Image (cartoon, rainbow, N blue to C red):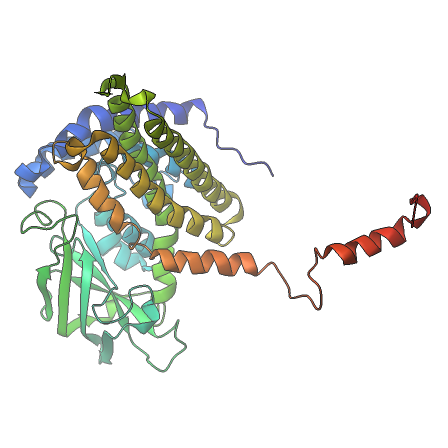
Length: 430
């Protein structure tokens, strides 16, 4: 089956509308977001969300039965390529992490009653959420090693443990918590997923962890939610807060991660294009040593490498999306990991080149490049560190091969002897 990334006229019109919304309405808001309270931010952005809903583009990652657009991965990928230009756009379109991934998890694992309580308000934008898996003293890339425990006590579960880097936790109305419920089970069946609502006794947000992207107090929490360190100390939740069955946490967590990796990578392409636009504008505008920068061979090399990197990443990610749509998420695993691994590095490299061409201006806060650079470094860690995806790609690639005895399959003397035997009557000399 041939790959086909084309769009029909209606989809093309939607993409044009999204592009105008992002450039004309949302990008200007990014410049003043840090000066607005959460309430004022909501007052300004709620009308934009309503326009998105009226256009039928809200929460497009979910099936129509769940209030979404049911776009499929290719169409979503093209949409996220545009949304990636600005960090505020995904939230205004109803597919901002962690809410987007959490809604997918709840759509798959929650009961009808749980959907009424948490999923529908989350999709409507009436609730926000957090996802709490990572722990400070266990490897974040190996969720089977977590130590947080949930012990059944009558009709309740009591959670004890230490989490951190829980995105958006300070602002969240509820947190999805990954906790061990059966330490003796198979390692992929030990943990379960729980909803812990805000202000539940025993859940304490210790602090928001400062990062390269949000290094200062207030910077991470005003509208973005931060990355929280959380203590669970005798935190009691009813059995109705268990999502799915006991032992389902690992499977549910994978449901929320894989599709999101495609969306993230396409957003990175949007950021790459924005950085590339700045690079090229500077190259044709600035003069050095009597020539425009664009005439210098090293700058031309940066332009060339960036164009090739961006187009290669775009095709790789669209291939992953197409495979997901036509053959299912299992068939797309290798392509998704390839795109995620390569995408984070390409974004870093393109932004780095743009900074280099701008010199001191690129390093300053007068341009968005320095923030893009700091955020790009995070992407090599989030949603699976580079090393996890390297291992996944290699494992799936090597699975197609079997060991050989003796000489390698391409051993020239062996193959030549076989060819001589097969075509002996046609040989002119021994």
